Amino acid sequence: MKDHLTAHAPPRRPVDVLLRPFQLFAQGQAAGAIVLLAAAVLALVLANSPWSEEFAAIWETPVGVGIGAAGLQKPLILWINDALMAVFFFVVGLEIKRELLAGELATAKKAALPMIAALGGVLVPAGIYLAFNAGLPSQGGWGVPMATDIAFALGALAVLGSRVPVALKIFLTALAIADDIAAIVVIAVFYTESIALPLLGAAVGVVALAFAANRLGVRHSLVYLVLGAIVWLLFLKSGIHATLAAVVMAFTIPATRRIDTRALGARIRGALEALRDDEERGTEGILTPEDTHALHVVEVAIEHATPPLQRLEHGLIGFVTFVVMPVFALANAGVGLGGDGGADLGSAPALGIMGGLVIGKPLGIFLAAFLAVKMGVAALPAGVTWRQVFAVSVLGGIGFTMALFVGGLAFESTPGFLATAKLAILVASAVAGIVGLVLLKRFTSPPSDG
Image (tube, rainbow, N blue to C red; front, side):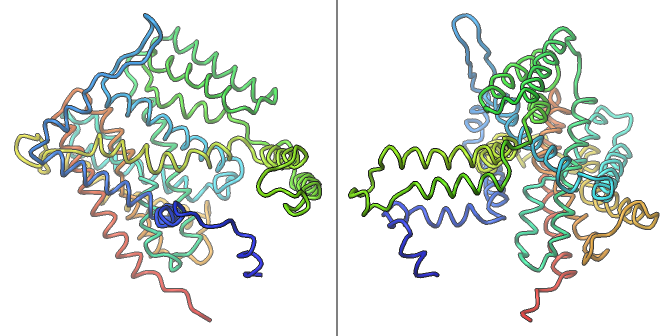
């Protein structure tokens, strides 16, 4: 069988040899976390280098788009945080919808444990933060230590490979997605200032149009892209954070397929029968019109058998992992470590964030999960121990991307607090990641060969 596959494999080109190491790296589960970490480290290095002023000035560069007199101009950092991160939130929305329809959040029984654990992982960190900051100008940052960075958390699990039970990986994934739902609600409710109701009403109308297109059977991504861009602009102008438009639009994407697996197989078999070998055609590499039609039938059949939701998620995940999140980290993780940077790890905001992520996250997640199981509301996944749940709860303290995002919203008008928040997030996330990995390695065993 191996020889048969090798004989029919396409010939290797010189470019294939060059790209192979990068392709293998990108396929690894920890690849996204590694690239994200590298971007954060680079941002820290540049922010504390002789080129720190030039590095900071890059993100304030005015960038505008428009046609004629109509246009929109904003600093580069806002295009990254408002527009590029909208792609990140769109994928998050797609993941949430998929999990709600057919994943770990699809039924009350499946969703109970991660949802309750996530709730504990939201309330306890916020409480710890407020314990340090209540009544102070920094109290608005209570939402910063609430979110788990799914890329770093799952990347940490990937480091330990097959010794981590599959059920534990599923629990952490569902937990992080439930965590994202909570973060999105917090951003929408608590980090939105004044709202222009007419513009918001117009946005709701466009969203309703997108839902109507879904019900009518419209499946072309371009339709939802155009409507999504309009909703994004209306959200931006209405006062609601523009990235939330991406989450809302994700729920309008069709999640059904037009043909089932049996019909797909029948169409592919029929198309394959219509194809002829190169020797029979008498040509090498050039397809006949009949062969081109047969391949087109296969392509259309595969498209009809794949829900647009999953097709978009699959198509965007690489861009989000290797472009959006690293660029966001590069633009937002840089903070001066000297006295001029304004960052103070001994201040109330820093102590609240670090305490919330390193102590509040594991405490809230673990205790909520433990109580849910003991009360009979949820069940512990098969093959998973409480010690492993605690280790994963510690990994939940890796806040990074979402924490930096919320920090930017909470402390947008107070640069000193923002610098402190960034440094506190980086330190706390590093501690949570290292401690969580050490505990998880200790509480898991390598798979037996037998």
